[in-house]
Amino acid sequence: MTRKKSNDSFLQTMSSSTDEQFPINFKALEEKASTLLSKGAFGYIQSGAGGEETLQKNTSSFSKLSIVPRFLNDVSTVDTSITLFGRTYPQPFLLAPVGMLKLAHEDAEIAAAKAAAEYGIPYIQSTVSSYSIEQIAAETGTSPKWFQLYWSNNKEISYNMVRRAEKAGYEAIVLTVDTVMLGWREEDLRNQFSPLKLGLGKANYETDDVFLAGLPNKEEETIIQGIVDNIHHPTLNWADVAELKKRTSLPILLKGILHPDDALLAIQNGIDGIIVSNHGGRQLDGVVSSIDALPAIVNAVNKQIPVLLDSGIRRGADIIKAIALGADAVCIGRPYVYGLAAGGQLGVEKVIDGFIQETSISMALTGVAKAQDLRNVTIVNS
Ligand SMILES: Cc1cc2nc3c(=O)[nH]c(=O)nc-3n(C[C@H](O)[C@H](O)[C@H](O)COP(=O)(O)O)c2cc1C
Ligand SMILES: CCCCCCC(=O)C(=O)O
Image 1 (cartoon, rainbow, N blue to C red):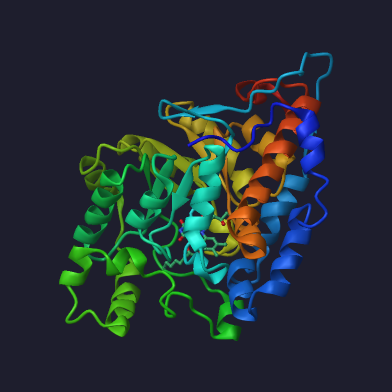
Image 2: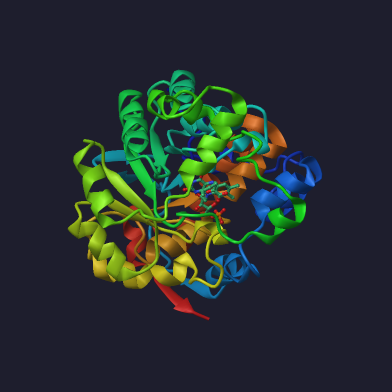
């Protein structure tokens, strides 16, 4: 797939960032989305678990970190590319797995995956998507895609979904470990809103032979109840992780790691990468922000496997901070979902384009010409 835009030219950068139609930053985009979506849908996307301490911390922790730039380096050409699992990607960010995107737009994951494909950015598809693995693969061809796995109570369903992703050309499996059950989400309780129960996350299940074989019939209600029964998986443990590793040749990342000892256990169990994440503050409220958890994990991992980070990335400078503190790349969640709500595929592209431009400018102003050199940047608490 040809790349739509690159960040090679600052002139191009300046001209497209003056677009007045589209919100310029996260705050404006969130406000725009709130006017476009139903109360239930917006609340589901925006809110965090419990008293939202962690949701707040995810951004305030970034604000407490400051970049100490260096000058008088030639930054006329900025190379934002990174390498993960032997593949080079043009930007240091990926689109995080976000389920049930019909919440935001009818084109849902197809729009998000196509937007990512335009820029060569890996799109991580959620298990609980509104479109199936095969539909997304058919729409996006060979563009980089990873598959996020929600463990199933029936392990054979998990193995089958991984096989389907492998067959469809996905490049990695992301096993989310922090969602063995849904967090305590008060906004959804207030709104009596469950997109899972509305059937917005059923595409990968209703197309899965192993899942369907376990149901008494294929009626919509039965399928949705089957998903609800399957998706809570409190028994998930390290032996399951080790077994999954044996069942695929794709790299496996664990998403939701916050403790250095879990990072070390991941390595011991043959895992290929981790995503330091608190699920955007949507699971256990009161947990550490991802960016505060990162340094100890990076130290423990000691470059044995890639360490990615999500939760709270809102602008280019956040990406600089995360990579300077040792992340190999970051994932972006809510910003692109709001872009999807505001403008479908084009809206996601605008969000991606904004991140590309701001990251490139931030790198240059930090005095760094290559993403791999961001690790040498000094970050202070202030
Ligand atoms: C509406 C919504 C749905 C999500 N669905 C999933 C999912 O299906 N699987 C998953 O691993 N993470 C899911 N996440 C978490 C994201 O992958 C990511 O960890 C989080 O959004 C990052 O934080 P940010 O939104 O602050 O960027 C979801 C997040 C949101 C906002
Ligand atoms: C028990 C898992 C349901 C997850 C639904 C999607 C998701 O991850 C979210 O944060 O919402």
